[in-house]
Picture 1: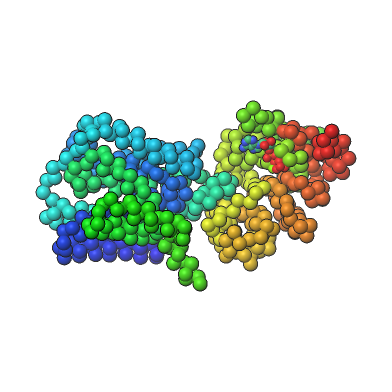
Picture 2 (picture 1 turned 45 degrees about the horizontal axis):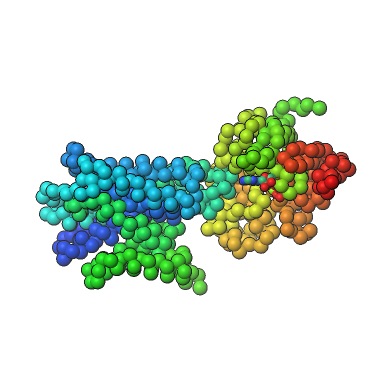
Length: 310
Length: 242
Ligand SMILES: Nc1ncnc2c1ncn2[C@@H]1O[C@H](COP(=O)(O)OP(=O)(O)OP(=O)(O)O)[C@@H](O)[C@H]1O
Ligand SMILES: [Mg+2]
């Protein structure tokens, strides 16, 4: 019943997006909206591993960029259409996720985070040296005319609305299933979870793969959005920081936390970019994150819960 | 002396465990009969917890075999051994801290119990039997020492064990609390669960066990009834030093 309701809310949100499209507001709103929604996907995907399973992935740029560069490769090689790019970007990044899943066998805590960060650096170096997808010079995409809505900004915004809704619905149903409960158990204590019958390795592999998949999905439309992709923009450190900061600010134990965090922080960053400067972004994230870690370690969701229990 | 196989629940056959150059277990063998109450004692660092880790699958062994109900489980991962019925409690309680006491029991009920005995009702029954039902909705961090030990046992029970290995469930408890835990373990045993008790509190092990096995420096040095063990000079030497 609740799942049906969540599904209906998702459909309603897509409808709302369409309405926004129909209204034809300032085109900048679609650009900004795209970025915020992209962060909803990233934060939600990151949280499946970082929040539910407790493995802090600091290599988000690797997965995002893998999605973007898979798309570039497929555009170059086959002129593949957007839906194919999204699916393929997700699958390739999901495969990388499966790979880091096996890392969890040996690496826990901060060592896992460092390894994922290193992975991002290594992958960036590989891409820089791969001329077929643009190498260090970057890749310029010449977009055909937008097939729908008459504008790529609007079309891509709608694509992101749809992808964000799907990602959040999937994360939510994982969280509420036996898988989510098993992940919570292994997050609390992996040894105890295993001894209580939880197949910890299998669940971790599931979480890293799913998380990687949606991070790749978030990156796949990126070439269409920016039309010029260079390694430093696809592997931007901002993705690593935001992917972690947004769920932390919203609350990591439930699906709504990353959504709240991404909308708040993502919007604040967009506003700051326009009104002050884009360099301010990281500073905002840093300050807000420190405040939350100190004052509300369970994020906004935890804060609200505590106030309610008063 | 040799008993019919059907009677043996767990058979540890010459297992060894090494940490780097240090031999923590040296070809330890042990047979546990179905329904038995076995005490496992030994000085600090003698390898008791390590032995349990090998049996439960938390650590891989370096040689030897482990059989459960006649089946070789040496290569099975820990969660599968749990599903077969080997369940251990931890010397240092390891509760799931983000969950309530009730939800803590939900994990083994969902993942390990053979019948997937459903939900809160089964968990509450166990909590009631162990005297923890009033705390069902609390987080484990709000529990006292004894309640934490009870949660550890309750969670193990929720996995529906055939063999329960209790690793120092009584350390640091008052003598009334020790009796409380002992009574719970006796009741579990009466319901058909085989129990291995690791304990430093001699009064408790000797009262509880039908048979006691003594480890010292990774080897088995003695075995017998509690009366035999207290009179065994080798055991005395292991405990008091030379
Ligand atoms: N993971 C490990 N790595 C290295 N050495 C270990 C490890 N676990 C145990 N040891 C060592 O193995 C020996 C046996 O330890 P174990 O914990 O099994 O003893 P124990 O009999 O349970 O002691 P206690 O009564 O204090 O609980 C000790 O010397 C200990 O330091
Ligand atoms: Mg021990």
